[in-house]
Length: 164
Image (cartoon, rainbow, N blue to C red):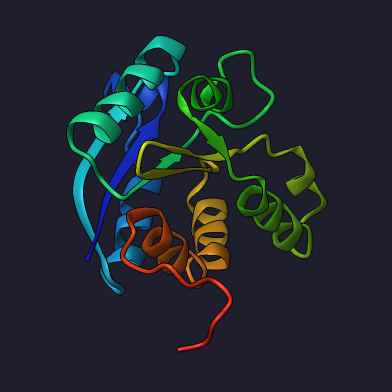
């Protein structure tokens, strides 16, 4: 099982002023596959809070995958990509590029996404959009490739170019 953390980044959600619909949508999708959600939290759009939470789930909980949602747009409060870039050790641009490319088939607004993806220690971090629909679509686009990447990252598999 791939141990996963889901972090919703929302000022209103963290204050109880908005019900988080995106985090549960992500959890629902993952429940149908080989992902074990071991952590879920809603935090505000504060760069220090996001950095701290990412470090905690990567360094202390040592999850295999972190899926953030929210904070990837153009609003002055949208700082999830900046926080993610501060904590990752390796950039994984192909995942974010694939999400934007596939989303562009649905809406031209997808080009406005600032989502990033990267690795911290042995954890893959993926920024998803804040809307339930956008997060679900983007997650479905990348899910087929994630297990192999995580297998390589964790050392569970060492062959990238061979078919099994």
